[in-house]
Image (cartoon, rainbow, N blue to C red; front, side, top):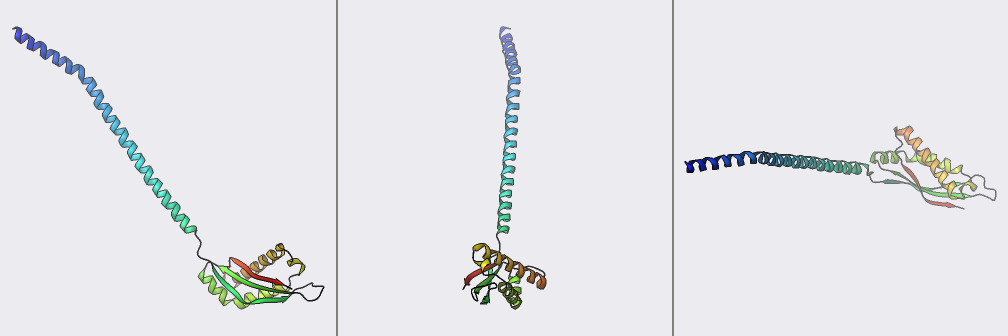
Length: 176
């Protein structure tokens, strides 16, 4: 009986160890599952954030690409304008100006080419009204340039419904 009571005692001890170890085992399993869930959630969040970040960078690149303007196209109004300047007290004064119009729209370039005679006439009248003293400094030249651009835009808007021209450039400016 002693052998069987020793076996019973060993079984009882074993059962006590298993029973007392199960809460630790259960805690360990819960901890591993919780750590796995936290890691999986972090991975999911990071992958979504990375995907969103890539998407945002692509959107920025697309918007930047859409902001790059079309190439500039120039139209030279040939031959150069030559006019007598108004208000010259010391004899006749002359102005020779070479003008180029800049646009980024191929259709507007065709319209500028079509209406070049009207543009030349309008600018010729404007340049002929200029005062020699007013064109002596840079500010006067820039003011004349702005007025010329305004007149060209007004003419193009009246003829085509769109200004079409972005800039008017003086590529040569000689006063005598």
